[in-house]
Image (cartoon, rainbow, N blue to C red):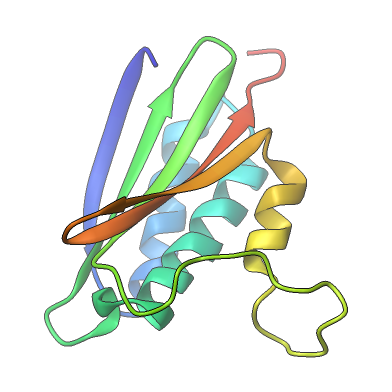
Length: 129
């Protein structure tokens, strides 16, 4: 990756919108803004809802890495009991489809576990940039 930007956010739901604005501003004219905003929205929401990042004093980190033909959106959280995974498409639940959305628009995605948390990332193609 050629350049990297990151910003930490308090682990509250209201900060997900700020994470979207951060990513949209970085990608304006440099990549797939709509897909990147969708990715960061889903990953940041998951961090706040499903990890220790949503506990009082918690935080999550958004990392944007630009490569020649890809942009990687990564959200680092403080970890939790459950490991991020794709849900069954036949599920009738309202939640649980975020990673399916990410998988459908990303070239690739994955999870990196750390001793004090984890990172979920998605690579998006930078067409015509």
